[in-house]
Image: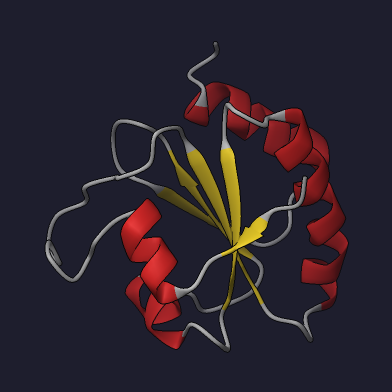
Length: 121
């Protein structure tokens, strides 16, 4: 199972409708999510992609893993002030999302998923 690409409209439908509530975070997902902001020309993004696909398989049904192409979805990139790629947005079920810039090793990503997204479950 690969990480799913998200368009602006899919983000609004599945993650948060920032057009309706621009000053308030209301997560719409049914499970925690990780969103990878990437670019096709980015070397570290290319190295991270297969790791995210593996994690998408490992956490299927527990965590949704998405990808957003910053060149195609400039509005989403601006919304989260993405300045460098890859940037990873970790979205727990409750609370605010957390943004991390740069690629992370798989073990570190698993730790964040387990401890922040799944709250140690």
